[in-house]
Each structure stands twice: as structure tokens, then as C-alpha cells.
Image 1: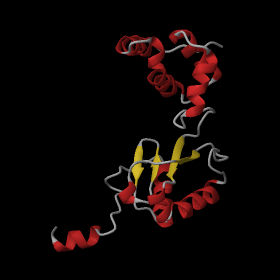
Image 2: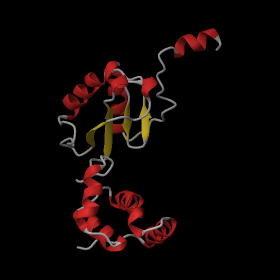
Image 3: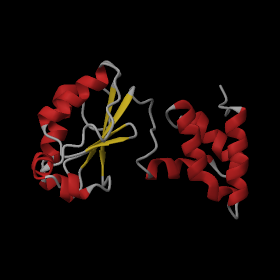
Amino acid sequence: MAFTLSAEHEKIVDELIARYPTKQAACIPVLHLCQRQVGWVSPEVIDYVATRLGMAASEVMGVVTFYTMYAQHPPGKHTVWVCRTLSCELMGAKTIQEHLEHRLGCHAGQTSADGNFTLKKAECLAACGYGPMVQIDDQFYENLTVEKLDALLDRIARGETPTQEETAWYPNAAAATTSGS
């Protein structure tokens, strides 16, 4: 079945194409828009983007496979990205990832059997001073321990969406509060 965007999203595609010197230059934002609508980049989405932007399907596929931000399979209800850059690695990212693999019963790139979580590795989530950290859907969670991560996942599994602010476990937060700074 051919993929189609909603009328609202088609209008946004028109606006995106108008911003760039060539239609092909809008490939990345158009792919984002399609993924936002259906949750992943299916072969039908690739055909749609190729046709809409006057590209070969192989060119669009090259973009999709190059960038890790595009889901090439239907994701779980929530996507958990574990930052594995050196800063997070030195602060325990490997332990966080191994714990997630054990708890979710899947490895990076896979989805838990219950379909609730897709686990992924990220090269850098740009929060190097707050590692180890994860991104769950659109929220960052920093200065994690296994216990804090479990509490976070329990809340998300109950349907809650903890904000980054309420889960900001700064290493010296207690000292800052008691010292008045």
C-alpha cells in the first residue's frame, strides 16, 4: 500500500522544499516528518520520499541507513538511547547498557518482547558532563545509576512521563541545597 502524508504534513513538505536550493536537499527533514507520522521509515516511505523529491529510492535508502536517527523497523512504544561516548563510558554507560539488556531481554537495536522498549546505542547525546545518561523518547535522563534507571523505567511502564527536571540527579544536588547555593 502506498504511503501518503496527511494534508497538514504535505503542506509542511511544500514549505520545506521551498526553503532549499534543490528538492533533494529537503530529504532529511522530509524523512523526519514521515517518521514522526508513522513511527519508522518503511520501504513505502522511502518510495514516497524518492518520488516526492525526484530522487532514486537507493539515494533515499542511503540517507536512511547512514543516520542512526531513522528507525528502519517499527520501534517499541518507547525508544531508549544509551549514550556510549567516552565521557558516559567512563561514568558507567556500559553497566547501564548491560542492565537494560538484561531487564528488557533484548540487545541494542532490538525491541523488548512486550513491545514497550526499543534499545539503541547513541554515539553522543551531547550531555558529556552528566553521564551516564540515556534519552528515552524526547527526554534526557542524566547521572544515572542502575537503581535510578529502574525507578525511571518503572514510572514509564506505568504510563508516566517523568520530566528531565524532576529526575535530574545532580551529583552534588544535596550539598548545593543545604549550602544555600
